[in-house]
Length: 141
Image 1 (tube, rainbow, N blue to C red):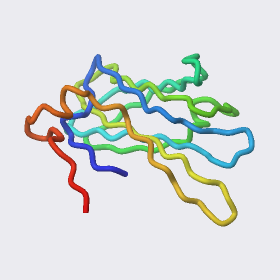
Image 2 (cartoon, one colour):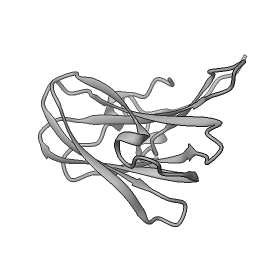
Image 3 (cartoon, rainbow, N blue to C red):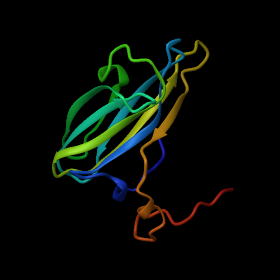
Image 4 (cartoon, one colour):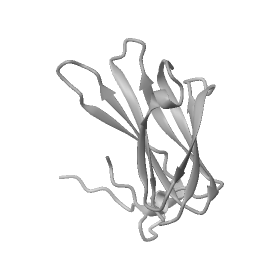
């Protein structure tokens, strides 16, 4: 998983998407999603599975305690759902916590169980803000 500064976490009334959700009919991948509470408070979260057209396929509600992390199978939201290129919409609906979200598409191959991490969308104003915790540059090598 990529490290995401906690100031990118969403709070009550905010939502993000996790794009690139895979659950192909040939079962070559399975997808899990995760939520992490980052503020030390409780958060009530609604997670909605959307197909590539934005239609809702299923949803679930979760309560995260302070600093709690959970990971669930996509099937917990919509058993039997098949998609290529869907998204998860994650919204903090109550309490006062702050939440980061991610997904992980895992290869179901005999030779590989390798995951691909799918990050939540990040607020572009925070990306280049220069504020503490903002991303101000990338260095390679």
